[in-house]
Length: 503
Ligand SMILES: [Zn+2]
Image 1 (cartoon, rainbow, N blue to C red):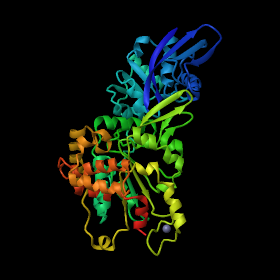
Image 2 (image 1 turned 120 degrees about the vertical axis):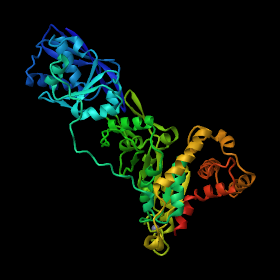
Image 3 (image 1 turned 90 degrees about the vertical axis):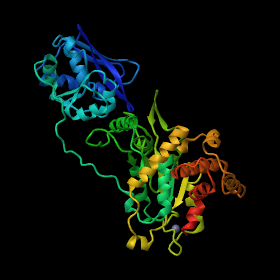
Image 4 (image 1 turned 30 degrees about the vertical axis):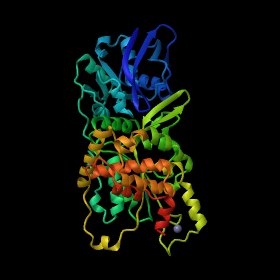
């Protein structure tokens, strides 16, 4: 008469365990789902009934009530279908309750009774990984990536029942799909010349400093940015798991292992919507590009083309490393620990080169205003990237490969973690004197910059953090001297200077 079966639902990027309770009782035949199901979830009534009939099970022509507990939270998606079907079978005494006691069920049912994979399988399964988890064949890899040890699959509802009764064997491996070939990350060896931009990239990776590249089209800004993941340290187990959960919940193509193992690289187009970039949505709340880029790189090409409102929305996630998205009564938190790299043309026509640029002064000033202000201030590193020199292109030898740069980055990160417990860009202002002490000459140099107004108070802290990273890359002399500070200042050019430099 009554049954309770374990399943799970997705809230943003986190799975929550759900107990599917079913009561089959006297009364007019009917089927009600309570406990805040969304539209897709409510429709499971029709899918479950059709699956019963097409697989030859008896549908109880009585009053069926399904409660999704805890009832205070909204349940979404079709992943509860299988659990509802199993609970109905138990409540109608077609299956013994013991058979499903140690299991959790996460699959959608087709009208023919077949099991279908669901979006967000990794976080869904993670919520019930202490049990045997029954999923569709296409979800086995994702379920294993979520850390579940006992994952089994079945082809259809009849197969699930036979396995629960012990008359058939579960499927335990995913059907061979078109295995995607691992594409190697692009290598810095392909970048010829560009010593300043290469240095900026290395510092950005070592200290997790946000980077702005300004230069004309064809200078290789995007090429440089795409090589950043290749010099970042590999993901830790926790980071890899967190990335896997977000990618699974957002239904993004995954590596064949079902697990994200490299720092992600996301490059949303400037026409991206607010929801697409930040996350949210009306039906299911999905993570946006900034969460998909978490633990990796968010690359905004043509920064000046992004709507100001979208850029404004980036400020809070950059500060806090998480993003909060709200919809009526629900607020969800998604990770957003990305390294921001942006590229911009020096002027509206993009040429920037003397004699070729056709922009007048007012057009240039208006263009610069578009991305000046608070967001610009978040970039610790702002460098100008010129067109590659002909000599470098024709007879220049290959650049230093990513593997060598990555080794230095790893070492610098290890030094920083040991000293300040994290990356240098996150050193608190109060801790700067402890972790980034200045030599008298370096102090004098910063004082001069402040006095002539080339540096603001906030800019000062950022320069000190970058100088700390530069010193760490040179095997960490304890005290920061004027050469470190000079390099840091050189890599933090004012925007008007950046645009003017190429004119
Ligand atoms: Zn121009």
